[in-house]
Length: 93
Image 1 (cartoon, helix red, strand yellow):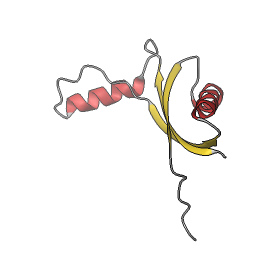
Image 2 (tube, rainbow, N blue to C red; image 1 turned 90 degrees about the vertical axis):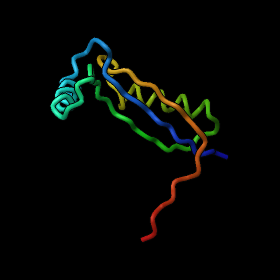
Image 3 (cartoon, one colour; image 1 turned 45 degrees about the vertical axis):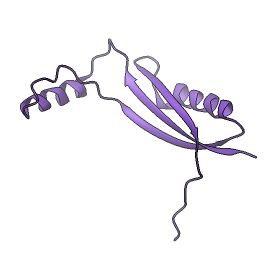
Image 4 (cartoon, rainbow, N blue to C red; image 1 turned 30 degrees about the vertical axis):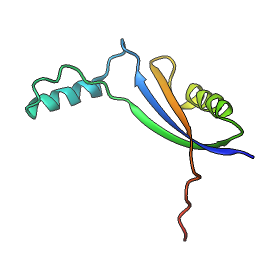
């Protein structure tokens, strides 16, 4: 029987890739009086709930999802964690 897992995925630009959004956020924070901010990198956080036969199978699937769709390997890197989770409740209606 398959178990439900929750994958928490973080995707960030590789260190040498320019991050214009990060620069804009850094400048905005400085304008708001946060003078100690030196650098900002902006990425994305994705949560995927999936059914799999084991944590290893879920990890293999999430890694493939990241490599095929969720992260662009040319200029982004990703990391993720997986934990067993209750199935997501479906709203009535």
